[in-house]
Length: 245
Image 1 (cartoon, rainbow, N blue to C red):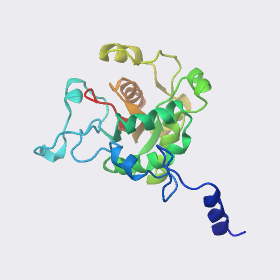
Image 2 (cartoon, one colour):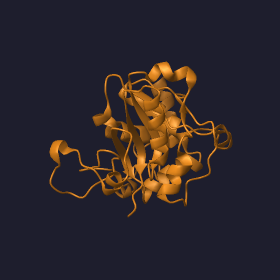
Image 3 (tube, rainbow, N blue to C red):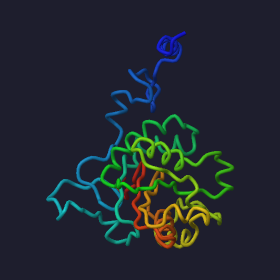
């Protein structure tokens, strides 16, 4: 049977469904009209450091706008972007990928993230996921950040190093902790893999994760990369949490 005939037969048995609600859609890994409307894609003016949407207003010099959160909290990275806001459908997508074993969401998420990442890409960009401690990886069975990093890197034709960073020490969940406690908990918990230092020396690293809240985890990862000789660090997330979300 030809591949096209096989694909048509599979569509009859398994018609494409909305990634969020499961309703029938025209193509695989798509969103139905209502879910597309309700998905909080980041558009318009954004913070140059974390990618959060900003209210419309006059452009800053060079269009490098910064949100209040990033003004209050020094960021060790150079720039950041997000595909979604962590609210409503955006939050559902992240939680389904992170805790619901919905790895099918990686493909559409990678397309959205690749679009958001365009201003960050350089010829020498090396993608790297934010790491999990091995105990958490054992329980979850996969690192959603690594799945996203691999898929986005393929979308934009850049290399990706899945184990560039390691997390030798387990940390408690950051949920429910205040900003200062989050940063104190994460300080020094992420390191560059000793055998991978040569891969980042003098290069720009693009760190990838599913969601950013305070930025404590990204700060620990960025500081580790810079200490190991990276020329610079940017960040990319599927969804950016905001305090008013």
